Image (tube, rainbow, N blue to C red; front, side, top):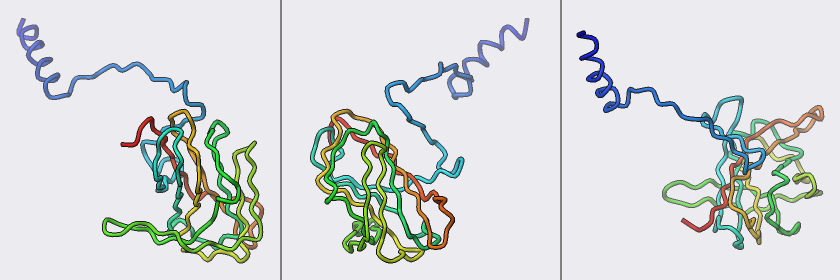
Length: 191
């Protein structure tokens, strides 16, 4: 009898303090193919990198700067590969994609990616969502890089698009090392 009187009181206290178990149905992300949400940035070796967009709005003219901090570049780079999803429908000109050396900003200064890395070749494979950069000389370890896309026309659909960076070092076996990923968000309107 005492248990039945205390149960409603205990249930009310648990609900009020947020201790009650809540049943939430699973959510399926069917509208975004290939989307993997990463709540823990270190899980499975995933490294989320910073990026900067001038607009980030659906269908707008934009400029992307995908930054790779020097701490992620532990060995010299002979080839840098950027991959992006094949369902990304934004458009950019081949001659407006560059690899640059950057100075990451902070609260008091903005990120600057002014020095263009001289390339011996650059290969853009739109069918497979891949861009390969071949610098004329290996890029030293610890160099902060930026992949800069100028004159981009953003996709007409909002969403999150995962761009990935990997690299080959001089003398490496032909196996790419993962450097990190950018989860680029294109929104309906500029916030």
